[in-house]
View 1 (cartoon, rainbow, N blue to C red):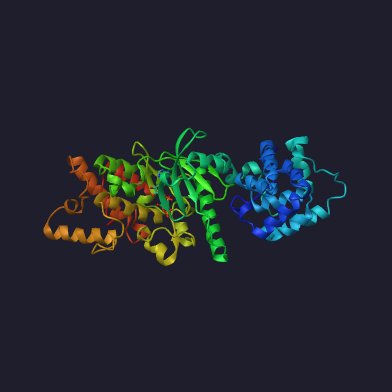
View 2: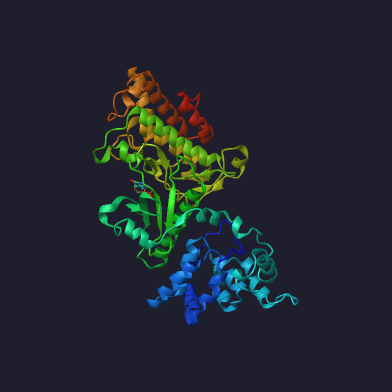
Length: 486
Ligand SMILES: Nc1ncnc2c1ncn2[C@@H]1O[C@H](COP(=O)(O)OP(=O)(O)OP(=O)(O)O)[C@@H](O)[C@H]1O
């Protein structure tokens, strides 16, 4: 079915499945009656004939075909606003009224436009397949265009959907097959928001990691808020990963939003997380110093890309060793983009109006002080967390430990530094990761020193004194110590 210019704000993430359950149910009840849903399907961009066939089959099992149709449309990136516009276009005023509370007020005048079309306009709502895209555009602009205040960008200009469209939608059933029915033996990790399974998928041609976002079984208002937040973060992750492809950013292969739980499918990272490898979990060998160097530089490059690729820098917001994943060649890739945000670079202008983020709640030990106290969000938030990561790579110590006398890692390094000065020994001699192989040569010795110095500079309390990611990449590649930053 053809594309139409149903439009939307690119930042609108009120996806159809986020709508209030009662409203969604009412819409389904009405559209299921006499198979009315079949009359709107031709107007839904992205809906294919096979989707319609699938909905018909679904109906034969006594299930709501409209619900499936809306889930499939939603999985292609369509929101409540799109649905509202669709109802305007197909003149389903009753349905527009039912869901009015789900869309921004600026769209409400669509109802008036539908009821009072310009007098000379011929009836012009025809299935998109029956006319050219340009004609369709023309007729829509007369009949059911969005409010004038709305951007005139068309579907094809909507970055959110372009991003999602570049990623393969897969069915929940395919994921069940790939993961052996989400079997316990396929579990490779658990995070705050879901379980990650190893799987094999024909569609993507090999091993994948499937993150199955926990569906809450708490039906209270709080439970549904938590569930909505989980979905919001999954979609943020999907949108960001689909938009930014880089050697050091975890590739997203596919997604499924139409099953009981949303799932995201990533490249399988055979060597797990940096956290696991530093702790030698599952009996793995300690990382060599060459591997540590390559991992540090690769992860820094991934962050630099995020901070500098787009017009507005992207702030990861949850940089930590658990979110740096290692592929079979030990190449690091940044993962877990659920908290990432468009944000400010550390420039003077940004200082005047720092962006306040209420959502970022990355792991405390990695969080910069200005964020904890004032919720100030700049790229230096990631620099701070990355500084902690470097100190972990150098020392093998955890970012925070209850059993260590000095619990925070920065404080631990500073105390150790004083001790080294007191004993008149080099800091690296007492801070070095005891699990790591001995330093083999001068180059390795000096790289360890660089790791510690850059780590401490990155984790400085004053964010203006922290280096940028561009500087950090340079320091690590050239093996030089930041000047006067400690
Ligand atoms: N693409 C992947 N390939 C291999 N293993 C992965 C992949 N993605 C995640 N994992 C494993 O699954 C674990 C859980 O990942 P997940 O992103 O859900 O949580 P987390 O980052 O550890 O925690 P949280 O999301 O709560 O911050 C990771 O620590 C890692 O060991």
